[in-house]
Structure formats: structure tokens, C-alpha cells
Length: 262
Image (cartoon, rainbow, N blue to C red; front, side, top):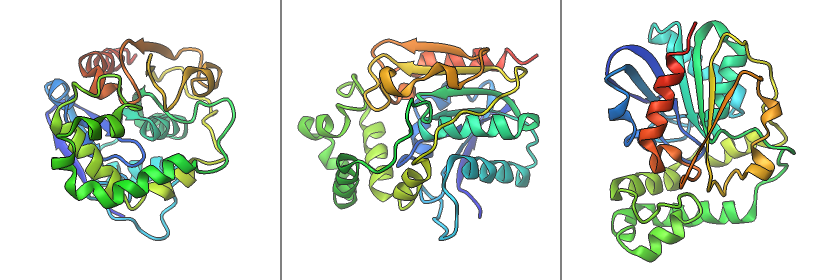
């Protein structure tokens, strides 16, 4: 299948991979800080953003990584830097493990899959939240002007929910409510975690916010699952979407990691 994507800037390819229920729009804040140094390519995963959901598309992180590599083939891109948020971070790690010859560096922004015990089922709260978004996302522009709505939707995601740009909030609600691939992507993570070896020749940086309530340090940031050469960075006053809360720092870390290629 063909995935939708946004491309801007020039330089070495940098592939940005969004999380479950999100889309390429989630990278709008950070992209301007990266496009002077990279050709920034932000994909929409199947059933997210402007990418269709094919009935037989496997949605586990490895299969999604394979799909992205195939997309890069069609674009004539042999090797790239990868950065991903949440599920996207996990996908970036899968690509590095399976296709080291295609991977320059990996930067994981609150990557999923590093949990002590794999999850086995969908949470009731998460499923309810998604259902609510399905019925309200078309009114996001007006709803998100109300403080109570912003707090309800983003208090758990960002400690800076009051400060986030209106466009960022609206884009996130629309992507979440319209993602036909949401539950398929969720099911693709169940009973799995990332625990594969990655070449020491591939620089890895892992970024978590100190206020990540979605993937807390106690249960979902297991360092022993990643290679010993991985760099770990903790950002203050940052939640599960550090490319929103701390986009300057994240852009700097992606750029720094890219410069570590031997």
C-alpha cells in the first residue's frame, strides 16, 4: 500500500514516525527546526492521517517498520535517520534491528515497547476516550477553545497543556478521532515488547519526559531492553509528546544524534 507523507527541507533524509491515533501533523512544531539540516519526511501510518487502512495490513511494530522501508524504496531513499514518538519510536527501533543497512540513527521520543511486562488487553479508559473522540473531533476547533475541554483531552498527555498552540491541539484531536487504524495499531502492540539487538554502529538516543503518565518510568522505560550504547535523556516539564512540550530540546537531540554517525 502507499502511505501519505509530508516532505520538506533538504539534506540527509530524516523519517518522522507518529504514534498510535496520531498523524504526520503531530510534527508541525518541531519540523521548522529540522528542515534546514534534513530532508524531513513525516509519514501517516495506515489508518492514520491521510493514509488508508487496508483490511489485510499487519499493524504490529515490525510489520509497520517493513512497510516504511518499502515506502522509502519507492522514493529512492536507501538510508535514513529515524525519529519516532510512542508507537513510532518502537517502529524506529524495529527498523534499526531488522535493517541496520538502512538506518543511520534512531531517536525515540517516549518510545513504546520498553515495558517490564507486555500489555495483554485494551484498557477500558483508552477505548472510551477513543469513542468519545470519534463523535467530537469534527467540532475540535470550537471545543478546544474551552479550557475544560483542553484539560480533559490533554492533562494526561502534557504538563504544558495550557501552553500548547491551538493548532497543535486541534490537529491531535482530529487525528485521534478520525484514525480508523487506531484499534488495529493498539492490538498490534499487545503481548509484545521491543527486545531485539541493534548494531553498536547505529547511534541511539531515547528521550522521555519527566511527566510521562502514559509510559511511566516505573513500568515502561526498561533500559535493559536496549543496547548498552543507547543514550538516555530526560526532559523536565515534558510529557508523552516531548516534540510538543520541549520541541527545541528534541530538535537539538535529533541533530546531535545524527552527527554521531561514524
